[in-house]
Image (cartoon, rainbow, N blue to C red; front, side, top):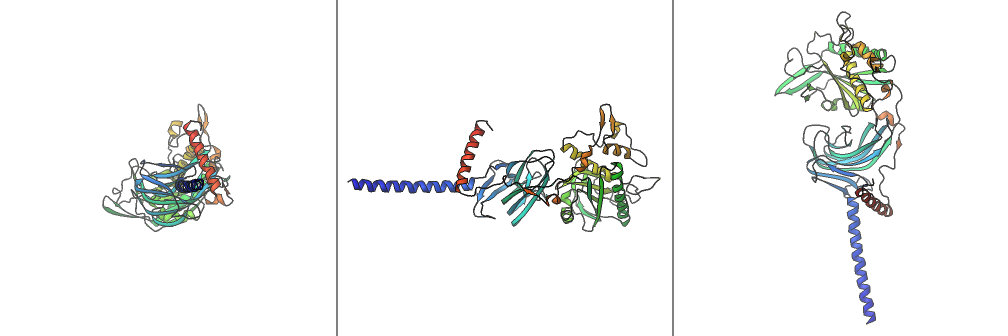
Length: 451
């Protein structure tokens, strides 16, 4: 009898142990599928997208991070990262997509890397794509932390489909201390767009191109002279034959050229160089079609950016008789004004992002300046660029250090430092178990309000 009891006990214990192992196995599999390593999952439309650690579709040994959106949504994995102020950073990861579709025609929507509460982002991938490396370069500016998101969607719209993210990496680059600015001036020789079901074709003339090239040389000299040597400008001029085929629209400005409208034409130029600012020179009307494209009283638009690089529209006038970009000592002695004005809008935005208090670029009359015949607002720009605007409360304007606060770009990462502790994955079962308890205790502290 005793032996029978021992046999029954052995069988019972064995079955119990086997069942326990099965439970542990499935619990471990569930953990691996749902362990997001401190990433926060969020979405614009709650409970619409599915987040998963995928073992079926992997780039490396680690499970990929997968977002599935069967309906249009903006969904992301994100994690707050500590950074040094005014420092360039580069985030890279591998991304694969399947049937990714945007809810509107915008190149900024798709699978991408971004800073979740800003418009700063990498390229956005749509459609069906095998694993490819995606880079996101940004400057921390006045921030000591940023919320890095691996995202299916975007700030300008929603996406649906499947996206996988893997092999995250963050690098800290070298700051630039010099004040030499590199400009790309891209002249688009043709505009061919459909507005209100009417096809409009507009060309830039050889005279236009000659005027712009002369004006760019004057712009280079004026940057140095008006800043009193605080900055220098070096401009490369490109002539693009491929027409502009899409325009953006804004209630305040009417039609204009956004970076997304010309990305295909300029991306190779920008990717192969280290530019700090881009001028897109376009013609959106002429004497024949002057009323067909709605333009609301602008000749230049600034304060935009192309993946962190300053971006400005410079619009050629409809009239071929205009002297706006043509030097004439009796008519216009400051034809580079529009270029300088739009560039200063980028410096104005940068100054605010770094926490400086400066006057509005358009408020020259509030400080006693005038738009003068022949030279426009030249005196205002000079004092603005040298912090020499006198007020009852002191002297104001752009701080001198603003000329060294240039956008982050690839050249900053020739000698990069990888922050290996940010995106670590458990390397074995012991580290995974430790991670489980760390997450458990962290959640308990969150519930108790202690973190």
